[in-house]
Length: 197
Image (cartoon, rainbow, N blue to C red; front, side):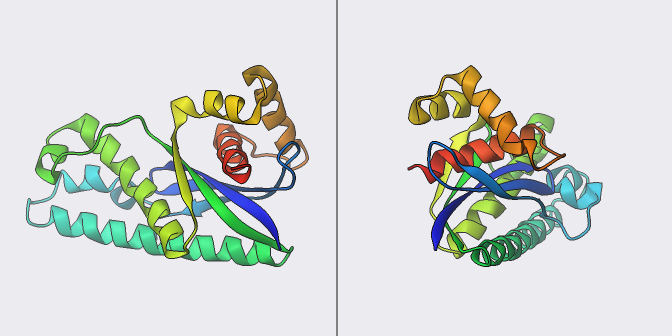
């Protein structure tokens, strides 16, 4: 089987995933998906820390843990499905890339729930951690890259100027039709970066 790589960009309750394969100098996008990381796509579950902030202190940790478990299970299921689909076209996922926030490590739950800014950060981290756990369960090497650093790092590693790299990313999605938004472009870029490593 030929190698493929997956790239993920996470949002509250879902993630964009793009699979790329082919030679390092001319990869192609073979899959793009929206992966749901909550069973019920409502504010309550896709913003778990926001929801927990309105709960009694004894309920909040249990709720967060339930959301964390569900996101991990859904992420693992989605990853297995993508792997199966790729296997059907003779591709095997060898590596994954995950876009990271620029945030510092989170404090204990009580401090998170007391800060609206930390609540936003924690919601994102919960879903990024779900993707990371899914990759770990599937024994797939995962590389995290801060989103703000991705373009420069990829430009240096791939030896393509940033402006030319942006054009190449646009071209990668041209034949796929919409959506080919920033989510898909950045997911493709981190997948391309880990594919060549």
